[in-house]
Amino acid sequence: MSFLDLANNRYTTKKYNPNKKVSSEQIEELREIIRLSPSSINSQPWKFLFIKNEEIKNKLAEVSFHNTQKIKEASLLVVFTAIDDINIFEKQLHENLSQGHIDYYNQKMKNKDLNEIKLWFNNQIYISLGFFLSACADLGLDSTAMEGIEKDKYNEILDLKGYKTIVAVAVGYRDDEDFNQPSLNPKLRLSKENVTEII
Ligand SMILES: Cc1cc2nc3c(=O)[nH]c(=O)nc-3n(C[C@H](O)[C@H](O)[C@H](O)COP(=O)(O)O)c2cc1C
Image 1: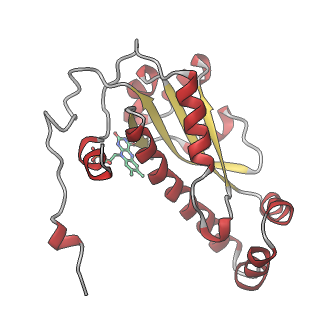
Image 2: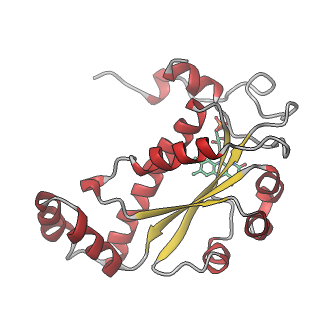
């Protein structure tokens, strides 16, 4: 399928088939793809937690507002976390990145307000989110991006240290009757002329 077809056909799944599971091979492929997400100066200020364990997934579902049922019925929950401890980031930077990127960070970022640096981290997570949603569509998997989650409670349940929850994605296969699929609920978007311009 072309990327345009994927974009037209992927959608935010509202009801999952609890009996259809994402295979271990697909999970490994998603892990490999998400690792390859681009980020500013290749900063990769993230960790992606693939929650297969039903008990933990159910606990997270309970602190996910209107998303509870989706998470319970989806096969997999992926929690996107950003580094929240600058020491972890700087260690990772020095151990793994090129000198050019280290220099850029030292000259342009390091002296900024800590909140601004953390916001910059969060922006990178959202790039990986878009990348991941497209990857799911390419693998024939349905997905739901979710900001409607109690992030502090996620941090506690997952016992995150030095990282914090930004967003989560349920992954699985749709219920055949999910009202939100494009054949039943056509995509609503602003027009191409509205949101793009050729200058
Ligand atoms: C960052 C982000 C957070 C979202 N949070 C939720 C959510 O908590 N629950 C939900 O059902 N949909 C959520 N959505 C889905 C959006 O509402 C959806 O992408 C938008 O309405 C466009 O519809 P489509 O994805 O079906 O094309 C979220 C989407 C994004 C990108």
